Image (tube, rainbow, N blue to C red; front, side):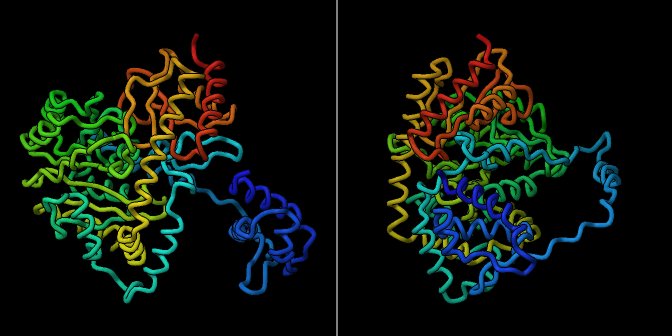
Length: 482
């Protein structure tokens, strides 16, 4: 049983038993709960924390857990209907709605119910995280002189220099002064969009693309305009046409292991894309989210677009989050020219700065020998998982085996048979005990065909991947047209 389901089971059991205790009465000590329920001390600690968050118990360090005083129900529920008018007041015929649709993002963030195999998430499981190295890095970071003080607004100099070397490569084409430390990749994307395009403006996006890009653009009042991609990345001729037709001054793209297709922008197109954007007087926001997620058989990777861009066309986004932990939200923006001041100003207004302990911990982590060991382990494990998922598809769902298999990232993009109802298939899969991601949220406009995205990162291992595909086959037999 997974730790998450063990915690949920213990929470439910303790919640039912609370009526046996008076307000203020002490619950059994943790050691007794461990022995009685045959769970780990960590499970007991997390279960009590969950009950405390619900206001059902109060924990006192060194004393134990006690039943809390019940909350008094409010005298009346209140009427929030006035908010519908207030929240829609900004929308008029000449304005773009800034309503936020986070559904596509939540599909990869939400944890599935206990017992459901997760083929939908965007983060690796605990076994693939460098948790021991992270714990050591955070402990060392907390003891650094000034670790709990205010950091520079742009980020710690040493961390900016590390990102500059990572982005610019041995040639040193990116200077530390051209790097801004951010609270992860999503925050960097939002900062870039707000800095580069005014509300109501069009912004070019790949089609399909990461739903977080679409959500961030729309939340900023921007209008996403799709540009089709193929297995070699975004198509330059269509990109030029989109710039001319829309008047956009920003393109957001993922040149390396694009999400969701896994495409890598070809060598010829790399040059063309930047030239097309430069001719349009536009910026290219390069979301380099998957550079640390290359598989062991990927071969040499192309450098970031930003590494070959002396004129400041490319604004580079990267992050340590995907390769480490969802909670190590440390990333970077790299840009050249006056735009750097605009990016800095937007971030300062939004969040002041990234917490210094996180920056110090990131520095400790990437400077430790465990960092390179973790990268080597992860690249090989991702390759094995990719092959395990492909083998399971070939055995149980051969019609869904993708024609293009990326050697990086953590997912496969599957085209479904014509006429398949994505929503019905996702619901049937959940009933069968496997969580998958529909393709529709990855498109800014109508899609040409139904799709699924299957992630091989969050599963517990190769056996669970195989079982997940078997459960998906059950759902396909129920929903997919013959």
